[in-house]
Length: 395
Image (cartoon, rainbow, N blue to C red):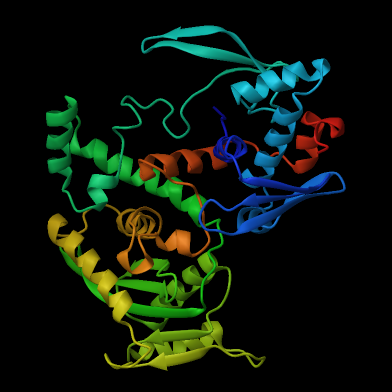
């Protein structure tokens, strides 16, 4: 199996029939894994480029480029001088020091949890042991350290009881709080670097929530078409600067300004909208205030989402740990984990074009991808072609 999440998914695509179509020696079409579309993958000089959002927006080697490279190498079986490359592809390991795939097995490392396979990079000589990304030095198995029960509304102590009954583990509720804080921060850094394809019609609303016994205000900004929650933030008051801050957060996630903003009649929205989005150049963003329940454009969808947050707050009896941890964690859960009936069983992230290939335990997959994105060096296409010589990538 591949170390990188993108490599693993690329290798999976390469092993499936009907996923890659060859147009010519340097151009291929790879089927999208989230819909019926296709992405064009071609070699531009010394680099491979792809039309998918992951490559266009983040300038990384995406799973579609990996699938073409794996397919070409495996199909041609390569010559004997590149046997080391075939071995590294079968092993699927990547050196974290130089990014090379020329990795071989070299003995085992013994520890209290058993033996771990050790590897050596043939290019730089670096030796390492493969670990599950995101769970280094954790006492419990990755399958145990999940956030799903918490964000589905189960209290800390009920989760503790669940782990004791069904897994025979003695875990403190404090440990669960630490898991929530640690992995919410890790995932947030990853997902906020992605670029969702939003409709430009945003809904903004605020609600009162109880935090450590005191009432504060939770602001939410949601995209209309995708239901993608762009920003969630807690503030002490409902002033102009508070509204501006949540608008700035939404802009940072969407990487764009809204075309239309729908809000209630709170006066702070008027000045905040003008300061953040007003421009003399066209087209100008439009601000719709005080929409009625029966209007075609209203705030019903964001208010329905806030009802789900209210249900979670009742279980907690108030938000007790750091505001941002719970709020950002629920935003991740809403966008990437929870399927929506109104979106035909898809998540808002999938509708917004963020195909992360999350399967099975979605929290576990998302944690691994977030850790891999942070830990594995960004290897440019030029370096990839050093590992995959030109004579090995011709169709």
